Image 1 (tube, one colour):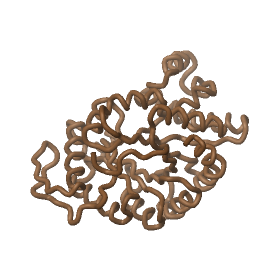
Image 2 (image 1 turned 90 degrees about the vertical axis):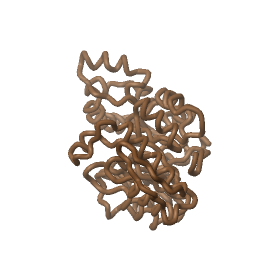
Image 3 (image 1 turned 90 degrees about the horizontal axis):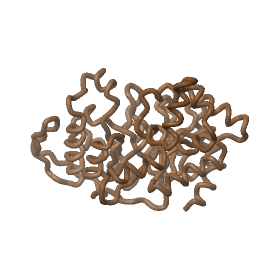
Length: 330
C-alpha cells in the first residue's frame, strides 16, 4: 500500500464547509494550524467550490497542518487529470496533502450528465489508475470508463500522498481496501459502523477518517437548542438514512419511535447517550466520549464540522476548550 500509512496517535481536524466563502479558506486554515489541529479538510460538493483550488490556497498559506479534500467524484474528471491535480498539490507541500475520491452524489452526477451505469467499476478503475500514476508508473489501460495510453506524471510526487475513498456501502469498501490507503466516513458515524468498515476493508493498514458534526455547548439549555437545530437535518435524511446512521445500535428503536411521532420529534427526544454515539453535539464531556468510542473502534482521525455560519468562532472554541481534552486520549 502506498502513501504515508497508518497515522498514530489519533489526528484531529477541522472541516471547511461548502457554504463558507472561498476567500476565507486561508484565514480558516491558518487559524486551525495555530490552534493546534492536525488536519484541515475542504469539501468538494456540487455545485459549490472546487476542492483542488481550495486545497492549494490552504497548503500555501500554512506550514505544518495536513490539508485534505473530501471528496473528488471520480467521474467528474479524467483519471489522468485527477492524478495531475493530486500530484501538484502533493508537490506544493510534500507529506501534507491527503486526497479523497468517491462516487459523488449520483443525482449531482446526473445533473452533469456524468452518471455512469456502474459506479463501482468507475471507482475501481479510477482508483487503480490514479494510484499507479502517483506511484510513478507509466499507465496504459483500456477499461470500461478509464482509458489511458502510456501516461506518466512528470514528475510523480515524492512521497506519494494518501489516497482515501469517501464511500459507504460494503462493495465500495471492498474496493477501497484493495486500491486505497483508507476511507473517509461521514453522516453520523458510530463505533459500530467503524467496526463493520474495518472488517469490510480486509487485511492491511487502512486509515479511517471520520467527519463529525460539532456543536459544543456550554450548558444544558444551549445543548437543547443545538440538538433541536441539527434534528431538522437528521430528520431530513432519516427516511432514506445512510448506512452509517442505520448501523447505530439505537436505530431500530429510533425508527419505531419515529413511526409513532415523526422523525423530527423522535430525534429531538433522543437521550444523551444516543447523541454521543453518532456526533459531537453536546457538552465537552459528550464530545470526548464520542471521539473515545471512535478511537476504540479503530478510527485514525476525526475532523469536525463546526457551525458554518460562525465557523471561525466555533473553531476557536473547539481549539481552546475541546482540543486539550481530546489530546489526553492519546
